[in-house]
Length: 248
Image (cartoon, rainbow, N blue to C red; front, top):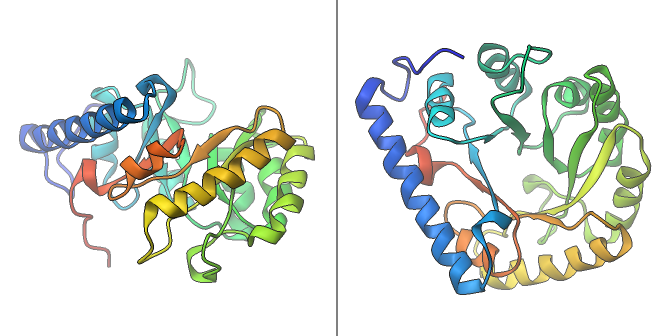
C-alpha cells in the first residue's frame, strides 16, 4: 500500500498531525468510558468511518494502526479497496472494511464481495445477494441486523417486531453470519435510554443465537453512553477525521 499523499482533506505532515490528534482523543474517550463501565478496551472495536473522506486519509489511518474502517456507498468502498487493499491480493489484508450505510438491493451482491462486515442489514431481501457476494469472494460475511429504535424509515433499521424473522434468516443462510444487533440512537432522544433498550434487545438475540453477541452502537457524540450499555463496535467518523469534506 502506498503511503499518504496530498488529498481533499489536506495532505502531508499537517493532515497526519490532525489524524494523530483526533485518533488520540477518541481512544482516550474510549479508555475513560471503558474504565467507568468496568470494561476492557480490548472488548471494543473502533470502526473509523471514512465515508466521503479521501483514500489518502484511509492510508494515513492504516499507518497509524487503524485496522477497521467504515464506508457507506458501494462505489466508494470499491474505489478505496481497489486502491489500498485489493480483494484477492496476496498476503493478509491491511484493513477490515465495514459497511455502515443503508444498502441498495442492486448493490448488495457487490457489497457482499467487497466488505468484511455489514452493519446495516435491515431488509430480508438483502440477505441472499449479500451471501452470494460473499461466496464470490470465497468467505463468510459478518452481518449485524439493524433495528430501528424509533420507527423512522428514513434512518434505516428493521421494526422491532420484524427482528426475529430477520435474525432467523441471517443465522440460517450460508455465506453470512449473524454477529448481533446494530442501531442508531433516535434524534432528540436520550442516547442512554435508547442504548439501554437496544442492550435488552441484544440480550434476547444473543440468547437465541449463540455467538451473536456483538453490539454495534455509538458514534462521535454518544460513544460513552453506548459503551456503558455494552457496545462492542463503535462507528466514529468526524471525531477522528474532522469535519466532512463537502460533497458535490
